Image 1 (cartoon, rainbow, N blue to C red):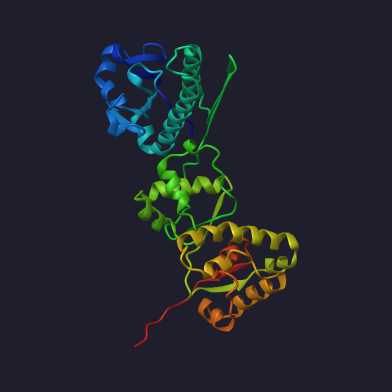
Image 2: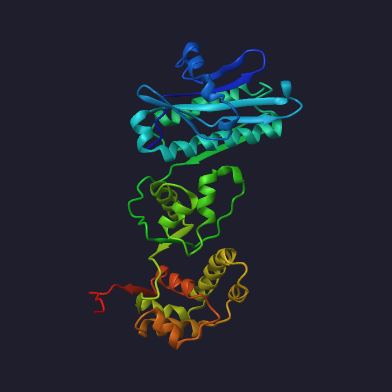
Length: 352
């Protein structure tokens, strides 16, 4: 799979001409009459600013992410612009996650440039914008799985890179719980949209995939798609749903706990995920005690041994007073590192 784009253009609101088609590629793929019919959607009213706009046009979709800025340098102190792409209808309906992320990335990138240097408004960078539209289209035409745009002129350097996102999320089950295995640093908050930000904020070693979708008011498919790509990037992993009735047994990797590097991994994992859990319950003073790990390698080893000898998690907690560690995180790390595995009962029964 790769990007598939029929054409792309840049439009803006001119205070004397109104909504204007400024640049496009390929040349003349969209005529003025066609643009005038759809311009009110691509340069829209306030309620659609900074939102993904998709417009069905026959057998294709037109996609944009309109921007609105205010500054004393602008005519009437305001400036509206939008970068838009035209996509085959079947391609968009199959992979709309990918294209919505792409168009948001483009809009946010050029908004940042506009704020820094009036990049679009001053019309000094016409050749750069045209070259960007050409690069966007030609990369898609050549079936490239990324768009890499890097050019320097007049001390202006643009590095635009949009990484292809893995589109098969069938492995992500609704009951899976995502856990952080690497700290997620956002250098520029505009690189992600609000929906992705909500998902990220609700990965806390407690919520499963379905619960994240409900909390964020997002579809299960969309949440699964984003989480799968976070996993591919090495930021998260998945563990099975937690229950006090769960039964766990040791794997041979349990002996590696005595090695310092694995114990250090546990400490990093614990502190990273537990900070997020504490945010969920800041009024619980006991949580503050759990942020620092107050056990050593031998105690951790005994916990995992005790867990695998117990009938279930409840039985383990009865026999072990573990006030100095979070049981969810203890189990999540054990499953993630294959130290322990969950046993599923062969049968169940009901009391009569």
